[in-house]
Length: 207
Ligand SMILES: N[C@@H](CCC(=O)N[C@@H](CS)C(=O)NCC(=O)O)C(=O)O
Image 1 (tube, rainbow, N blue to C red):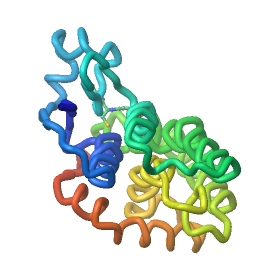
Image 2: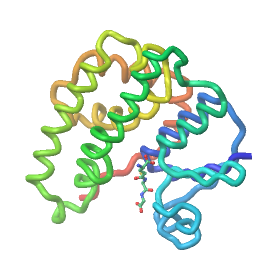
Image 3: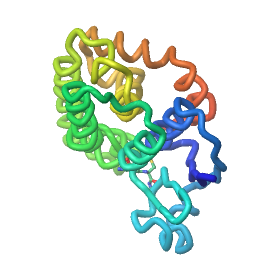
């Protein structure tokens, strides 16, 4: 059985939880925290020292995107078969890793905002906020009139959801594209997402 390492405050783990819910496959969950992922036992298995991570038989896998590709492929779900839709899925997966995560993730805006106030880099925060607005516009333009990023629901929507939800819900973009707001509402209504969010305890800003 798959062993899944979950950190309940992690938006990256939120993606994997949604994925597991959508696939409906059995797995054993091991809860981790900062001390676990930074410890030598965990790092010996997963050199990045990050969650989410997975053991699937002899396979040890970190990186939410790699986990998504692996499980979707293995279970023949959540990846369009039609080549153009599949290409749109790859594009959205790449945008998440190349644009969204570096802008808003732990190395980006939210990483900066979650530092104790005296350590925050205010000019960098201002720059990242502007960039986050631009990234939201790019995502809105890429999504266009579609219901989901690859026309049909896919791992790309799951991969983008955590950061987009956090940004929209925390008011990062002053004027987020309407179609992206509608996509977020559509995603939040999915039972897999609602259920994953029940176990998710987002980081709180430090004063
Ligand atoms: N690119 C990775 C990012 C994973 C990541 O940053 N995980 C954070 C939790 S959200 C983590 O485990 N950080 C390790 C630490 O804080 O020491 C992914 O998509 O899985």
